[in-house]
Each structure stands twice: as C-alpha cells, then as structure tokens.
Image (tube, rainbow, N blue to C red; front, side, top):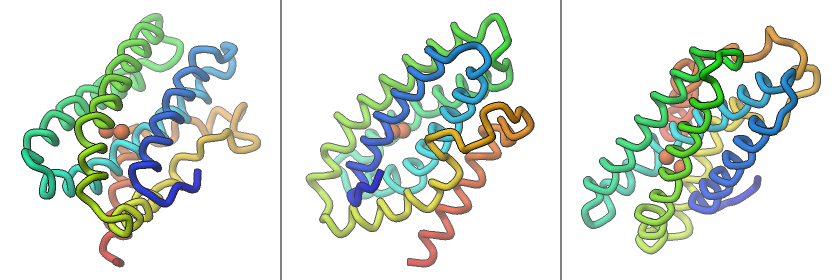
Length: 183
Ligand SMILES: [Fe+2]
Ligand SMILES: [Fe+2]
C-alpha cells in the first residue's frame, strides 16, 4: 500500500480491514487466532491514526467539524469497546463469532460514515501537500500492523496477541506523535 494521499491511504485501509474480516471468517480453525491478531493490529493502528491525525484536522477545518468528529469518535469508541471485549473473550469462546459479527457491522458502518461525511469534505478543504504530510504520519505506525502473516508466526502462538489492543493503540499513538513532532 503506497498511497501518498491520506484519504486514499485510509480508504485503502478500510478495504484491507474488510478483507481481514473475511479472512477471519473463512480461516480454518487453527488459523483463526493468527487472522484475528492481524485484524486487531490493523484496526487498532488505523483508528489511532485517524484519531491523532485526521479527526483533529477535520475538527478545525470543516464547517461543523466539531459535530462531524464527535459523531465519528462515538462510533470509534463503540467499535473499540467491541474489539476489547472480543479480544478478552478470545477466539475459542462460544460468543466469539457473534461478537465478531457485531464488531464487523459497527466497523463497516463507521468506515462508511467517515468516507461520506468526513473524508469527502476533507478532500475538498485541503491541499495535496497537506494530505501527503498526513499520509506520512499515518505511515509512522504501520510497522505495528503487518497485513500479511510474517513467516513463522502462523503457528507460533507465543507471538500472537502479544499486545492487547490498548497496548497497541498506545504504541501507535507514541509513534505517530513522534512523527508529528519531527515535522
Ligand atoms: Fe475511524
Ligand atoms: Fe477509518
């Protein structure tokens, strides 16, 4: 994913998140944990990047930016709560699949609202250079969320879910803030 424009990049990540939900749903039983781990990472890093980079900008720059962003944060917090609950349950819990379906519905609706109510207007109100700079900051935390399995990690349970989603979000936030400071 080499998009240079933050909106292209975040929309590509929305597509990647959708594909990762498919992967979890379609994985054979022994690969569900690894697929869910990848989904957790990509989702945690994606939402953190939006919270740190795109929402603050939209809040300042868009008409009624405060309101638009408040609605997005409410959706994001709900998705985050569902993710934390699901992570705590784990993939072997009998409620895992119902929880995954609820998470998917929340995340999909949220991504659609972002694209419709926030990104479209942000694109109209920013320069290509601003969007490029924001894309670079989003990328700062991308190493925490490899989208493909790393060789050897599929079966090595100790490498899975090393970080809770909250720990991942904290690390992503640190990396992004450092990148923003360096500018
Ligand atoms: Fe979001
Ligand atoms: Fe998003």
